[in-house]
Length: 150
Image (cartoon, rainbow, N blue to C red; front, side, top):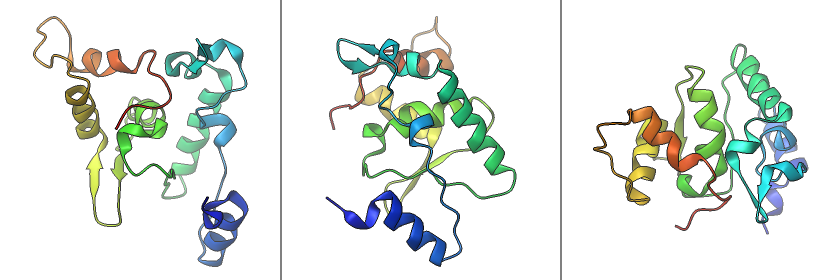
């Protein structure tokens, strides 16, 4: 649909501007080749996050952050519909990475704020006294299908 965003075109354009492009779709993508990551034909993020390939992808991003300013790209305009928000950034944030999400050239949202918005969107009780904020945020991520309704 958007040939300018195909991997080869994007890599060439970024290189022309002095930006390094590394494709990690096999490691951090939401379409795993591992049948154990699926339930009823839908990828299960909690299963995907436990794979060796995914963990290696997260480590690769963390290593890259030691030398570079890193941006993870996606075509999704709404961060709640993007697996990077729901899956990848969650695991980077657990490793004490400050993550922000940009949905336009002028709008950004800190990852914790995006997760709070997800809880509201899914109408999950934010006042549960028996769960920590971290537990409430993790609950909807277990078993979420690849796409959320927007």
